[in-house]
Image (cartoon, rainbow, N blue to C red; front, top):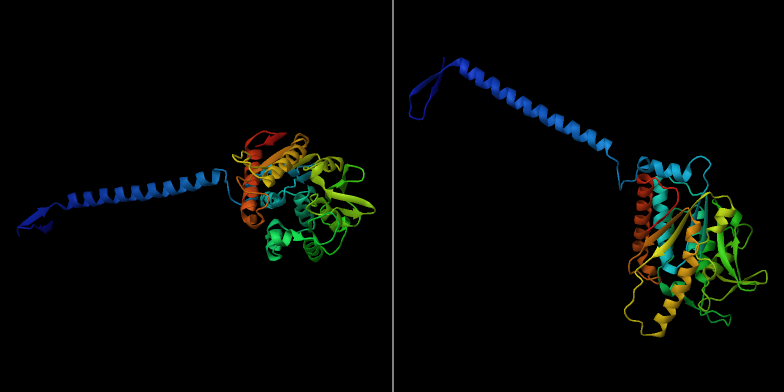
Length: 336
């Protein structure tokens, strides 16, 4: 017999069997709760393993996308549009491809797309290119658009840009690049687009591809004057197809285009420039296996100092593109 003392001081007799029974029931209840908690943890872990991971830098996440873009017999080409600071968004998209394990076999570009494409083809990672641009202070308009005091048809010159090219890509030849690269320029003598991918004068052709008429002087190479390739083709996918790429991604910019007030000549000129640029971009999107619009909101093509924001816009577009490839049975699609 067990003796328990009540609050009033009297002794109460409690049956040992009752206490043992109570103890046993409590132990069973506790054990059941512990086992149930363990079972819950195990089930949660199993569900977490089974669910597809999104937003993490895992190659396995995008295995289907990698098969579509780098499968047997596939040659992947990426075309980069022009658009001044808009071109920085390409770096974010290429970063997303790289994190997923996607290999780019060829790259082409116009204007800023040509500059980004050249550095990427030289073997620099997208984040390294961002670091180079910041280190060389090419996020400042005064460093990009330096006044040109020569009477050669341009208000600014590309001297600083060419110096940066020479510093990080010392061999002035397309053949020295690690990835085949096609640079789109406008031949002003014969009024036609030209796609250059071999031989020398790498820096000259790339700077010509970004030489907006009247802003920068034409670049003369072998007695031919070249300017910004956007005049004829702002999304040069054609040379990729001709070179044998059977899967192509065309990257172009989508921004908020409605403007309430157009009340000065510079805005009118900018809008006219945008119309021509859009026409020379959208006409080539249907030629791409995948046309990808990178949304940049209300960012401007002159916001060179917002390179990180452009990078994030491109990175987001790249992740969404890869996820769409994994989720949908698509062979050819324009991704809006």
